[in-house]
Image (cartoon, rainbow, N blue to C red; front, side, top):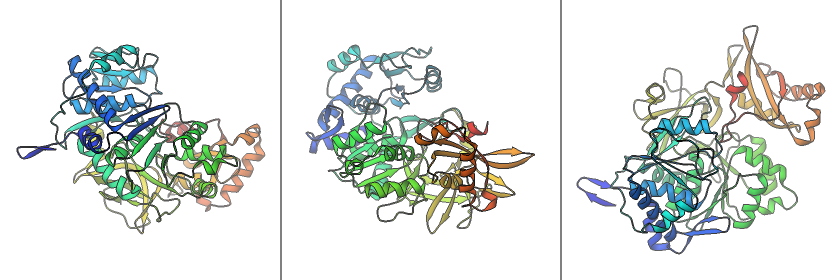
Length: 506
């Protein structure tokens, strides 16, 4: 960092790369298939990308949308844009043309970095200036660019990049983040929860275009001089297990759905595949205790579940090594504060369900062009209303569902998550979601279930439905009982794996 007057120049791309390239330049920073990139080569290619933007006439603050699979090129484009002073916006590679058109128009992006076969490639809004395809033309531009580049003189609280929310309840929202945000989460979660070391190798199932994956696979390992493993292809259970065997990561980041899928594919040698792992982490959706138990039985490893959000950039409540309470999201991560409040913002006593609100330096300044949402979500005093319902006892936070997912049955609030965690204990149930439907004006709980493979031929079997209903209702208080269950092929989800219960309610 350099002093300029009273303020300090702080460009997060330089913060993540300059020291690493100087003291561990020959160390492999990125493993991706057969490709390896050292810290020195990452810095050189980040500089090349910054110079490509300069050659194209891009200005500081212009948006650069990135639609690329996890790869070294993703990192070059992302950090290269930040170093130059443009605002990169990584987005999901699995969307359709309409989704990309919405995001490009909403963000007023001037540059799109993608590959020629991407569904984003045909989109060309009026404001659009350049399209950089990850093919020969783009590679030529990179090859001809200088490996030296000056960092844009940003400040800690200047905007550095955007993300888009996953849209679990509607249209995705643009979420700007500041230069300091990646450092804040990497220093607090990376040190306080992971205890990450220089010799660690991180592997994230969640992709870099998600907030969770961006921390797991980029700014947390880079901040601490560790290495990252990137999987360019979709994270099928087989691909995940093969990647773990090949690269021997020490820290594994998953989501509940993926842990469940890997468990079902494990054969006799499966548990040994994870012998290099010292920490398993989970986020994206509350981890059912049953999956925690089965994973620990199979591998001998605990899963440290936590909750984060796009708005906070990464995880702000987490279980920690040696301090795990299955079924909870754990305790507040250093550098953050959290409390449970009622509809009027009054803090609630322990054990009472309410809205989770948080504060911390990595929280976005606000949504892009969404004044109504900003007024609702951002509370004076630096607090952010997450939209999640939680209880808190002894400092441990337990997820109860999204605010609009909670059921009020007989005048009593009921968490769908508790019922779902009971459902998933039945041998036939692969995944489950519980929502409320009105019967004669009263809300009743209904379960939607995807069956395990060896039960799918019984999807039309009413006796199996009765058996599951008896199984669940016999284990829960009467007011939490299910009215009925429906078998469906697959639960509707966001790209991050969060169940979209609002679609089931419709």
